[in-house]
Image 1: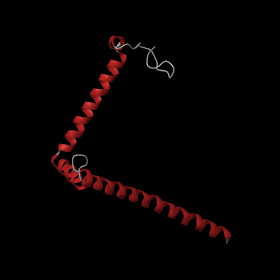
Image 2: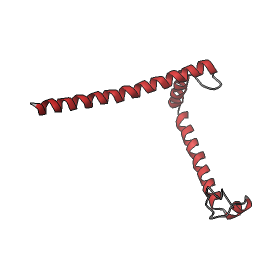
Image 3: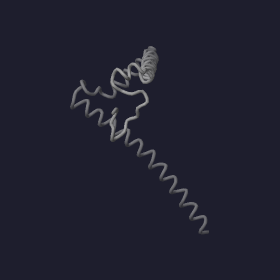
Image 4: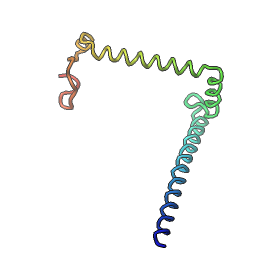
Length: 114
């Protein structure tokens, strides 16, 4: 009899935790959207676009295919940026031009280069 009561308590506790977690996530989402809308109203559209306008624009871009094109362009630019960074990271002439030694590691005592 006591085992049944303990297992019921554990199941009820797990269900309550599940509802608390999902409810907390929804509450955080509502608070973020409300803060976003408040910022858009008080600071103006120069700093924050209203959330519903942003969702409408994303929906319109998804319908006409512009969203996929923008995502692809962003991925190309970031891939090019990583490739350029990897090139300059390994280019000894570039490193020595700006005063870095190729295999030098920064330390707290020595800084970036000694």
